[in-house]
Image (cartoon, rainbow, N blue to C red; front, top):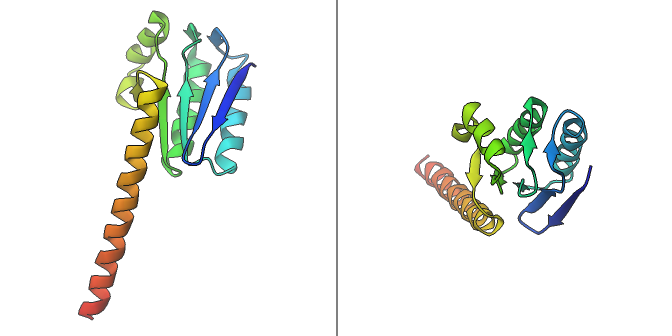
Length: 136
């Protein structure tokens, strides 16, 4: 399986450099996702720009990443350009479950926005907790 990973402080971009995301690649891809999640990558952008075909095993790998990053931060699917890939995602209704953003650049912006929102919510929750302590 050919791929590249660009790790940054707040996110990693995982670009699959294959034409097919199928049953031959999906198990290896799931393993890579588990490794990245265990390494503490808080936000993952999965780039499918080069992918021309996805089967049910490939969709399963994508859903595995989505589930892993639910508790870690944000999972974004990007580069869904090929008509057959788009169609499969729409038919399987995954476009209603996954965060799909057209480009890597827009995905990075989205991740930073989500990070900022989480930080603000954490601060708000901390202030709320402090207010409750004061009231006691």
